[in-house]
Image 1 (cartoon, rainbow, N blue to C red):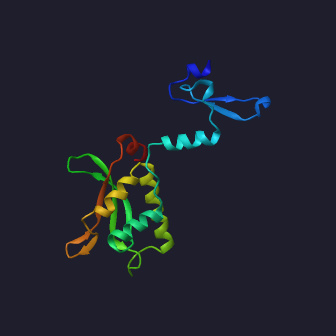
Image 2: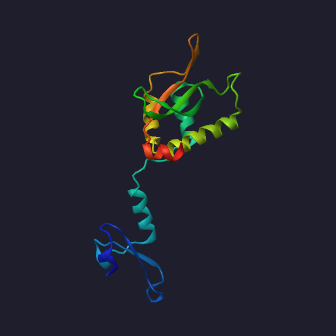
Image 3: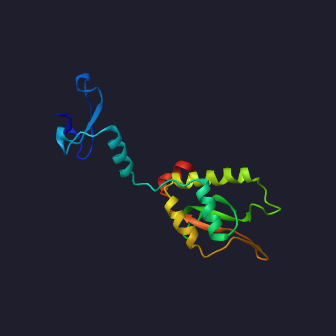
Length: 166
């Protein structure tokens, strides 16, 4: 039987013929034929089983930055070597901010930039890390007599994922 051959924990789709109402049912091998699930139930269980963090969007990143530093600072993704010589990715919170006379972007372009950064952070599985680290960050982006200093947040990106992008 199909359900018996399936990998443990996997669901097996079975077409239910018109005499049975013509809908798809999903069988859990653990439950045998008595474990029918509707398509909606399957979608819910699959979504619940996804182990990645909730994706971040540009608006959420904007709110995190404004809540932590009180200004809408620019953000970038930076690739550089850490102190041990290992290539790492960082979220940089730059010293320039929206509303500053010398800020090079319009508000629309700024929102696009934040959206792009948030999308990459989400794709790399680092959204929850950023949600945690920005509010806890002890540094401030600053331009002073020593120069411009961005806040650097090291992203926990797997090597294979980094190789795919760079």
